[in-house]
Length: 105
Image (cartoon, rainbow, N blue to C red; front, side):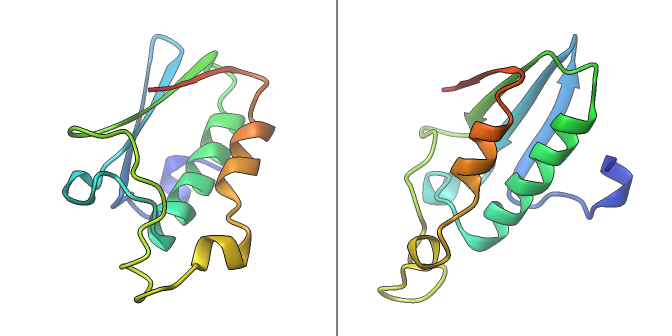
């Protein structure tokens, strides 16, 4: 999979420089809280990381004053537990990508 194969990201940004991939959570207005769109994009971006043999390390960060506030329950409806119900795939997908050095800050 290449970046050309997927729609532009709306809730994250992704760039590679000097063999370091940087994934930035980009919803600062809600402290980068995870919603269904961000979950989809994070799963897609980890596929890009896996497919790029030039990437040797990954940095995951958040734009604004917070890294990530957790699940954005307001986005999916009041009281929703979309991430727990669906067993959100992002944490498992991040663990599977450990063939490269990964730091989240």
